[in-house]
Image 1 (cartoon, rainbow, N blue to C red):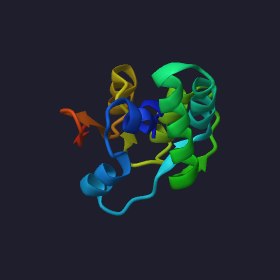
Image 2: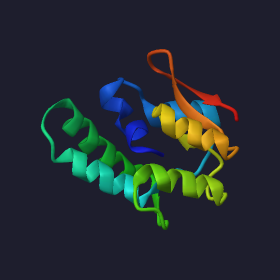
Image 3: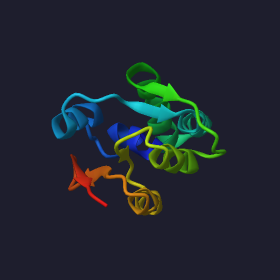
Image 4: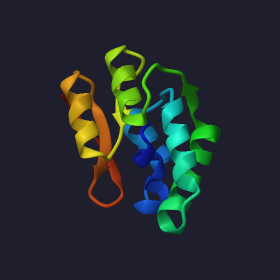
Length: 122
């Protein structure tokens, strides 16, 4: 799961975990440590982005398993884990990251419409 995916509940009013369950069925939710770090950094900011990041960080800690990696930043960590086969798909709404994930042959779950998630295959 990428940071913006975890921020969807506040930014897009999407019930991310319920939508993931609907789209995927039972699954293991992984979050790279760099994503948690990114959310923690953004959570210190003011306004809607700070609130969304704070909620995202709390959701990640409460409902996901944190996974270690070698990459220095969150996007690179998602790509690294996808390339290494640590995950079967990645949740993100970040178009450049989505394209990088699809290039390594891993499906991406993203926002479709206003409040629905859907899978994009490579």
